[in-house]
Length: 210
Image (tube, one colour):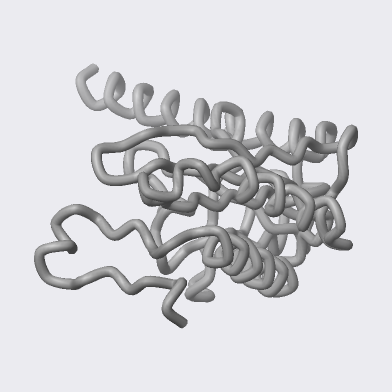
């Protein structure tokens, strides 16, 4: 009886996983949240799989979707086999199907430059509204505002979206926009807003002396 009970329990657990994986495979075939060749972010659950947050993983490339399991390729190219039952309750983000990428830039401003903030934010917004890679309102908002005041600086936050979604191309666009934003800040500021602890070691340069 003892061995029969253990065998029955083992078979029941195996059958449960088998049914769960086939149901998961059926749902993937019907709903199609992702397809082979697309890239997804996969959140790890209970240490069962390496999550996208690990530097060596990044986004998973979907290689193959079977009825029982799915094969994913991470950044380090080590194939990861995931039972389809996992996807029944997993959070999966399909980044291949995104239509835009968000641009977020935070700019520190010295208190001495407070009166220049309106001109600074207006110039930044005007630049973004003429950039070919930035999605314009009303499709997507462009926000450039003084958002916070800290002990040693004020903070301007820039939010916009780009229609460039391919990673390498977007990184180039993001770099171009970031450099332009900080060039505008430099034009309207008397210097960078160094952290308070940095003032003890480094005297801030004065842009007006250049």
